[in-house]
Image 1 (cartoon, helix red, strand yellow):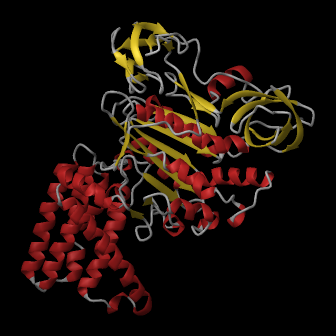
Image 2 (image 1 turned 180 degrees about the vertical axis):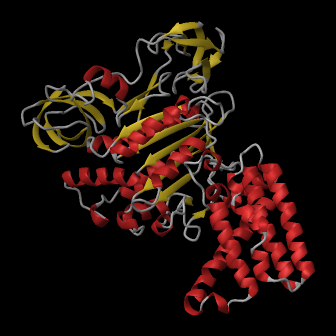
Image 3 (image 1 turned 90 degrees about the vertical axis):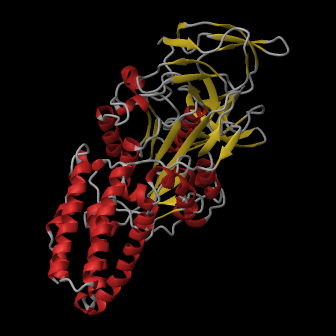
Length: 586
């Protein structure tokens, strides 16, 4: 069924004569067969957002509907791939069309010629339901791809065989109750705007270990949780997101570059293939899918890229994996929503954003969670959603930041003043928060000991006291403070500079294990406690601040990972001896 274009306004095309078309149907526009999606229908007139450049398109051009919604292909071949916002493989497009994406080009998301070695896990005669794992493919050395029975399919396996197959070839046949036989391939399609089903959602109760001290210790994120990283230009959002993608203890990472600068996405594309996964020793790309839709690419595809990425993430989650989706940045995605809304002449909300901005953001973040997967066997999977927000001028009172903060449970607020002072990650410990602390406490108590959370609370208290004391210092100077208050300032400085500050570009410091974080923070807090005791006994404050162990604590975070336990124990012993000598002299 086809219609005719009546109006073209940038990425928005209006066509008439599409009587049998539905909202969300994918259409082909013009002689170049540009890909588009129907946004709304009025009678037989359809408003279409086109995911490609529309220059040269005019009234009278033919529009043909495919009759199906915008969907992604799910199967072996996703990992190590780089897609655009509507899941076109960029590497294969470059091989065919050069460095510029040719309009109307269509290359399947999954390679149709490559054969994968399928290993069955079930036998003929076994009963299956949607979500069951029928076999596996070793897609990369890091990830075993589990082939799932599509949702809605159930019955008895009538044939299943091992061997090498393409994603379109039949690997098994399932016969339903009605006697109808359904051939199963290793590939399935899923509409991106529809969340994949699950049996049950659980409360997230395991932390995501990112190796970033300020995140893991002060503002932890749970696996299956949601987090936002807002910050102004130059505050280090992208580096924080890169660090999370590199070091987080998840099985699969989906990195969505939606609307960010091309050079930042280039950094990702150049860096990730060369990075070594700390968990397996393999290249990090072996468990990564990249979606690149930079600011110079069509704005409508930027809007779709978020949904493309999270649908792929849900697919790996349904296999029972822990998955992280990192979106950089949701502000650019919201700008794409605003542009399309304006062209549709919808009633604008605050700052011109559509009135449904908050509900669209919620639809994205609500697809995160810890879930019980579909299928007859019990297995859990998790999807963690982390979104960067780029408020103009760093003003978090703008609509995207406010709508995001109402949804997410972790807020890592980046501060330009910290960034200008070269304190990275520039996460402000006074404005950031995590609402997962209480639900994660049992895990920390069981795996790290109860002192970990007690030390965290003590560190947070010292940082809060420092902020209050700094106000007094600004008014009357540091000399007016008592010895205990000056020690609080010194300890807070140690927490900030020796613990929270972390260099993402130095191998030794870029990742810090939980045990190392616990020991390093304990060194600083023990120094504070011992000094307070010594001050109470009349010890000289300046002498306490100048002990050799104080300098060694400052350099402790650069101690190699295989030697830190012995070195930290040595520093602790030396610190106690030095302070005891000063106290004895008093």
